[in-house]
Image 1 (cartoon, helix red, strand yellow):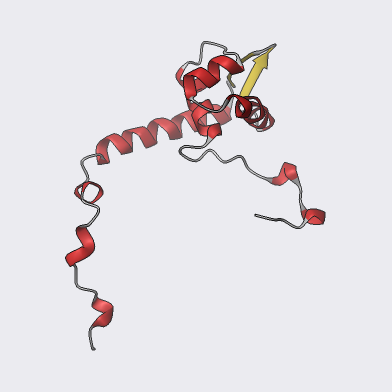
Image 2: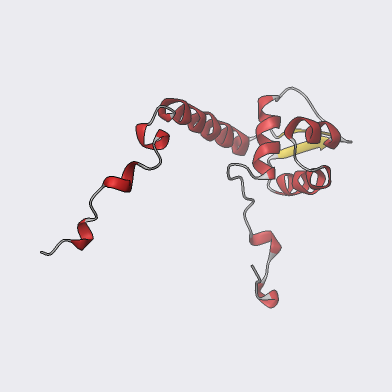
Length: 122
C-alpha cells in the first residue's frame, strides 16, 4: 500500500506478529527453544522462512526488543515483552486446542440453509 513519503516514519510502525508471518514463525521458533542461539541458516531450516527474509526479519524483531544476538547466534530476548508475548502465545495455543472441536469451524457451510432475516417483511 502506498504511503505519503513525507509523512512516513519507519520507526512508528509496529511489527506484524500475526499468525503465519515470518516474524511470528521466527519468534515462535526462538521462544520454543529459549536456551539456544541459532544462526540465520538454522532458523531458515527450522521455520521454512525464505533464507533472504530471515536476517531482515531478525533485525526488525531486534529493533522491537524481541530478539537478541551474539555474533551470528540469535535467541529470543528475555525481558517483559517476551514474557507477555510468550503468555499470549501459550494462551492462544490453549484456546485453539480447546476450540479445535468447534462444530462451526468444522462445518464451514453451516449457514447455507439459514434463513436470511433481512429479507423478511416487518
